[in-house]
Image (cartoon, rainbow, N blue to C red; front, side, top):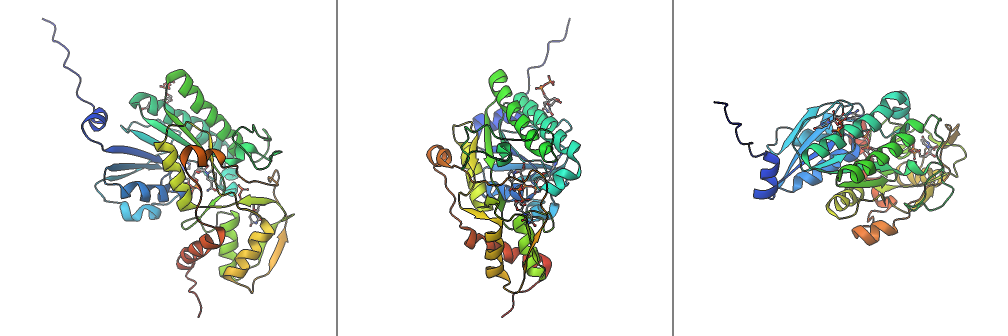
Length: 336
Ligand code: NAD
Ligand code: UDP
Ligand code: UDP
């Protein structure tokens, strides 16, 4: 007599879907700047179980210190370019170095992370039926010829430049997301994130807000890269996290721009940091790097209409919150 096949065990995933309202959420890159703030917010909800996967290339366990050992939290050292087997309901896929000096440090690894990493997370989403959100970037618009940038703009990107591993990597990641959606019915969400700042940014990661604040606190000149008239629009991290969660929970695939439309030249930013943090520092013009976008500002009409989202924190209110965190980490107490 041939033994009959045992009935399949109820999967913990299905159990969580049908018998409880608990959510098991994977955050790749959760030890990084935006990821760790997202984890803080997700952990506030007692129905969420959060699994972070990170290879600690640009992130740190320190950012998640308060959750280590918590029964609803799990931290796994893992590189997303390798396959991953976990059972989850949602995936926030953030893993990718975001600062130009880090992504240019090993461009081949950056493109592997964007392409193979996103492919693996989509394969995982397909196997377990999870919804997946990709944190894409305003860099998909390249050096934009349309201003401000709506989601319908296809961009102006150099395919063979030093930034391409990141820009084109994210463009392929977006393509993969839509192909898995169309071909396999995966539930996808794409956020196009514009420059974000706030506490826990890497102090020496070379991005402009972290550079200027660290320089102001160390009493060093603020290095404005030429010509200084190039613009960026800076979103405070709590607004960003709110936008990402709304996108995940909503019914729209995106892509949707998430960013703060307040636009500043790099010289204006330097003046503001100088005025708020250290009026004694000088502003020094330095050489720029190739392919630096000349202007950038999100059109957030879609985020407003579809997600009911818009940023609340103005640059002048967000910078002091970041200053406080940088003072603690650099050991520079406030005078007076
Ligand atoms: P971050 O560098 O602080 O975080 C990225 C995290 O991903 C780090 O913890 C890093 O260790 C991890 N990581 C990198 N490669 C990995 C790999 N192969 N496997 C596993 N983990 C890996 O950057 P961030 O500013 O928090 O950015 C998070 C996401 O948001 C990124 O996808 C980035 O492209 C996107 N984004 C950020 C900004 C911004 O202004 N901060 C703008 C646009 C898009
Ligand atoms: N994958 C993964 N975890 C899973 C399922 C798949 O990391 O739970 C990876 C898998 O190794 C593959 C990729 O996701 O490289 C794409 O998977 P898919 O099933 O779509 O394609 P295939 O395995 O048929 O190439
Ligand atoms: N930048 C600058 N001084 C610095 C670092 C950057 O003037 O010390 C400029 C840079 O040329 C760019 C802008 O700030 O125009 C934003 O650069 P960042 O690396 O922060 O982000 P991204 O280029 O990815 O928007």
